[in-house]
Structures are given as C-alpha cells and as structure tokens.
Image 1 (tube, rainbow, N blue to C red):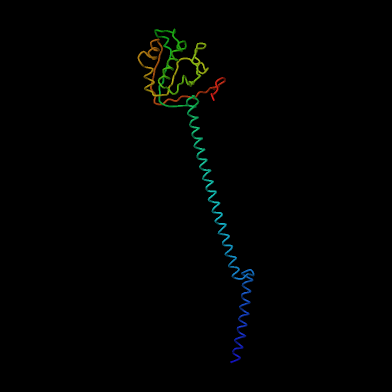
Image 2: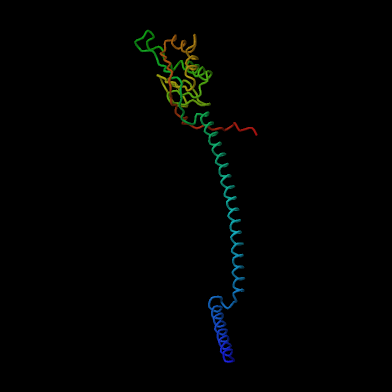
Amino acid sequence: MKKDYIWIGIGCVILGVFISFQMKFVQGTYLNGTTPTQKTTEILNELSAVKSEKEELLSQIETLESQLGDIQGSAANENAVIKGLTEELNRFKNFAGMTKVQGQGILVTIDNPPQDSSYGVDLNINYDYKLILELINELNSAGAEAISINDQRMVNNTEVRFASSQINVNTVPLTAPFTIKAIGNSRTLQGALNQRFGIVSTIRAMGYYIEVKEVDNLELPAFNGSIKFYYATPVK
C-alpha cells in the first residue's frame, strides 16, 4: 500500500514536470515569453488602440467629406455667378450689335426706278439718302431690336451719309439696291412703315422702288468694326 502512494507521488511529480515543461514551451514559442494573462492584456490593449485609431480615421473622413462638400458648393456658386455674368455679357453684346442675331422681322428692298421709266435716270436714291434715315428712324420707333443695311449692322455710332455718289454705312461705301433687314415684331414693323402717308408712301411717290416683306426668320450679321471711347468715361 505504501508502494502505491510512492508510485502515485512519482507519477504526479513527472506529470507536473511535463506540464511545466509544456507551459514553458508554449510561453516561449507562442506567447513571446509572456504569460497567457499578460498576452491577453497585451491583445486587449492593441485592440483598444486599433479601435481608437479607427475612430480617429472616421473622424478625419467626416471632416474631409465636409470640406469636399464646402468646396463643391463653392464651385457651384462660382459657376452660377460665372454663368450669370456670361449671360449678362452676351445680352449687352446683343444690344451693342457685337453678335449675330436671328428672329422674325421684315425685309425692305429699296432701288432706283428703271431707266426706261418715266423718271429716266434723273433719280438716284443715294442722293436722297435721308429717306433711308427716316425709314430707319421709323423702324427704331416701332421697336426694331436689330437693323442692318446691305449686311452692315447698325450700332450706336453707325453713320448713313452721302459720299462720292455713294452712301457710307460704317465707313463702307454702298449703293442701290439697298436691302434693309430689321428684327422685331414683323406685323408692328410692317404697319409702321406702311401706314397712310408714311415713309413707304413717300418713297414710292418720289418714284423709287420699295418692297416690304414680313419674314419668319431673319439672320443679321454682327458689327465687324471697333468701338472706342476716347472722351466718355463711366461716372463713379
């Protein structure tokens, strides 16, 4: 009986040595010399650090997304401002005659009478250029938005004057026949010219040929000259 206890004791010692050896082996190989408790604590600390880093990165992402939204909003506002300014610039360029335009209006043709007519060769519309000026004035009064004479766009400083048996328009010499295009309400423009005792009647009565047509779509060229101000300056 005593021998049994001795063998049991010896077995326990051997088992304890084996377990101790196994724990040391695991600790040295897998736990880098630390105890399981220490390794667990170390892993928990690393996990906490990773979570903190993740939260910080998420915060940075939110900040960057907010900044991106501000930049995009600013760009959109800037684009809206630029678009508005561009539209305003184009509108003033149209007013100034610096762009091609199209729209409904009227087409007026004025020419000298045929040489075999009763008027012979005595009449020349170039000498009566003031009739053209009067016709242009009627068109402007009737709301014409754009006018051209023989494809010379009329602007604020366009001249219509007699020079060397021709008519100068934008310093370009022109002669009959004259084709006058005017964009605006075609019925209103036509009525303004053809009213009783109006400019059309006057021109015909003097023996010149004149025809007025309403047109659904006219295209007028842009003013191809330059406008410079040497004396006029904006008032501040």
